[in-house]
Amino acid sequence: MSAKLALLGGPKSFNLNVPELFHWPIVTKEDEDAVLDVMRQGKFSGTDITKEFEKEWAAYNGTQYALGTCNGTAAIHASLWACGVGAGDEVICPSMTYWATATPALMLGAAVNFADVDRNTLCIDPNDIEHRISPRTKAILVVHYTGHPADMDAIMAIARKHNVKVIEDVSHAQGALYKGRMLGSIGDISPMSMMGGKGFAIGEAGMIVTNDNELYQRAVAFGHYERTGVASRYNPAVDVISLPELKQYAGMPMGGCKHRMNQTCAALGRTQLKRFPERIQAIQDALNRFWDLLDGVPGLKAHRPPKDSGSTMGCWYAATGLYRAEELGGLSCARFTEAVRAEGWRQCWPAGNAALHLHPYFHTADIFHQGQPTMLAFGQRDVRQGPGTLPISENIGQHCYTIPWFKHDRPEEIRQFADVYRKVAEHADQLL
Ligand SMILES: *Cc1c(COP(=O)(O)O)cnc(C)c1O
Picture 1: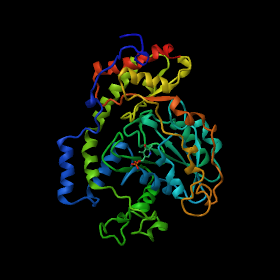
Picture 2: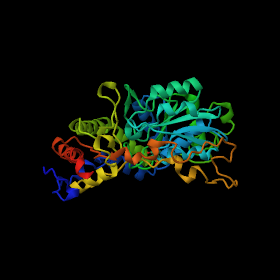
Picture 3: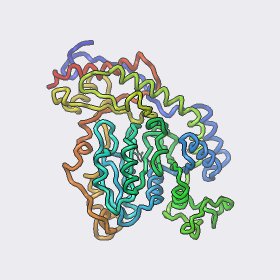
Picture 4: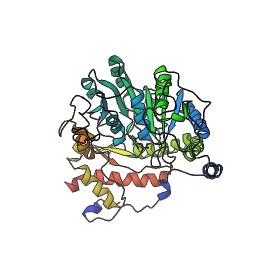
């Protein structure tokens, strides 16, 4: 391999074209038949298949209850309401996440107090939580970013001390473990996306898991009117609501919305789940191999928990590497990724979601036409934050970059991918 970087006129060092290494989800005849069966029977809008899927998902996820939803955003919305989040309240949420972790709080009249993320985990920084808790704080939202478990022991300790609920957004992290425990089974309630681009991909769908019967009932009441037993043409025999404050409204969704999962998704979920453990094992083998090959390369750091910790990355959603510019003479992450692309691997870019706390939506948007920003309009404390307040989130593109999200463990090809990243990092001085 030539030492001269391709970006500076050297020969390209990489020319693999292996789309099958990345294709996802993996669909078999069993998946196709399951979906076709729903279509042929006209069962799109029932709940029988979804309920089977829920039972199987709850068993897999290690929780007592699971509730299928139409998408992950809806699952987060219902979970927040289940935790009692309402007008004037606050939730704490990492700034560096997909918008759907945060926006449903505004739909309930609450404010979002954004916290920074940790530069090793890319998850909410447990040291940036406690000082944000006020008497109005109802919940801490945790995102296990790209499958990396957040520091749940520290977060749960803070939450229990202040009697605040913990909501795990597991959208990136199905099947991932924290110290041997399945993510989603540690906090109070855990919504997740199962949309087509995620690690567990079954269409447009979501799931809520919990061990708390009261939270489960409230999540059902929010958007699953057909399960509450009264005035329902679909399933009059089912009545899961015993909470007196909700029972009187049975048959109507408290959230005014319909959260039911399309059963083509539920059917696909059932067949996908059967093979999910073996498939995420292949992904973990591949990505652990990739990082082992890069062990000790300056500037590049694996985004994964320590090997003997009992924690894992699950399906390693949107696999990301950590960048340490200080080990590469200050070379920017953007320039590093440009050099990797120039070598011939075109999918290396600065990674992460843009910081939410700087978006005008969380400063000025007047969603309910009240003549003031929705972040304040329900009597919330003003917790809006400007530039310079959450440095890691604001500069996330300097801290991480995309790496190949392998779905199969193919050692020879994985080595070639690792070599590209290694070459650029080991010759970074040429770019300074
Ligand atoms: C995708 C995603 C969501 C939203 O899920 P949808 O199914 O797209 O509504 C929520 N949180 C995170 C962290 C996500 O990545």
